[in-house]
Length: 89
Image 1 (cartoon, helix red, strand yellow):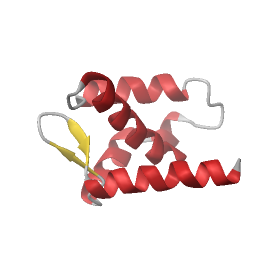
Image 2 (cartoon, rainbow, N blue to C red):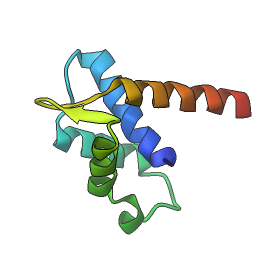
Image 3 (cartoon, rainbow, N blue to C red):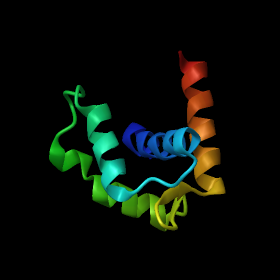
């Protein structure tokens, strides 16, 4: 997993906290592109958001029940990545 996979997990979790509902694919993609708009090193080909979402789904980090949500494994991964980022900084 790289920082963009973690970004997807964070978008899903943030949306859930703010709106108390699951995020739809179109809104997830929109939020992803807004966050990386300023990222100069990421090309559209490298982003491959559809492939990233599929991989996260197949590896059981997210699930889709009338919108995307994190699984327990996804919440733990996101929490771990945030703790790791704090220790590095």
